[in-house]
Structure formats: structure tokens, C-alpha cells
Amino acid sequence: QVQLVESGGGLVQAGGSLRLSCAASGSILSIPTMGWYRRAPGKQRELVASITSGGRTNYADSVKGRFTISRDNAKNTVTLQMNSLKSEDTAVYYCNADVRTFSSLTLKDYWGQGTQVTVSS
Image 1 (spheres, rainbow, N blue to C red):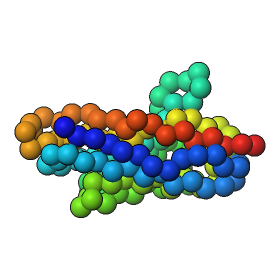
Image 2 (image 1 turned 90 degrees about the horizontal axis):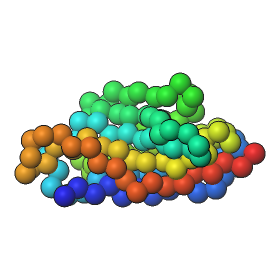
Image 3 (image 1 turned 90 degrees about the vertical axis):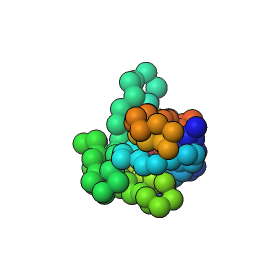
Image 4 (image 1 turned 120 degrees about the vertical axis):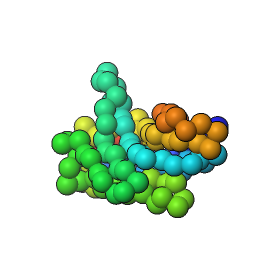
């Protein structure tokens, strides 16, 4: 089995910064893509940012220039640095990873438990 454990999040004033981290553990062979999604109250879950094992990144237009995603392939971790936070960034943030395990070569989607980010204006 694979587990994703998130840390970070919390309450911050508008214009401030937060850092989210996620660590994947288990019988992991490879993780081609890791990313962060968020779900704001009354809205659908949306992709915030993703990063491949080769370092290619993808960002939602709403966070470009403010958020930075990075990963450590050796440690199976992904980090989201969030700067210049806005009230509209308030949401539950979820870590996501497409994982190939030693027991199965098929990619499976895994999710963290979610961490709350609240930006006060």
C-alpha cells in the first residue's frame, strides 16, 4: 500500500506565505507525477500544480508567479511554496501522486488526507 502524508497549511493573512509538503511511502517503484489539488467551499476540486519526475511543471493560471512546486525524487516528496496568498486561495489542499508499485506495474492514483489553508483578508 501507498500512503501520502501532508504537512503544512494553516491560517495566514493575505499577502503572506505558506509551505505545504507531502511524503509518499510504501512499496513504491516510481512516481511519474506528483501534484497538489484544492477544493474551495462550494467549488469543484481543481489542479493547483503538478510536477513530473523529470521536473516538468504545470500550474493553474490563478497561481502562476505566486506558487512554486518542487519534488525530491529520492525521498518521494513534493512541496508547494505559496507566496502572495489571496483570500481566494482558501481551500483544502490535497496531495496527489500517480504511483507504480513493485507489486503492480499499473499506475494508481493516490491522495493525501487534505490540509486546510485559510487566507484572511
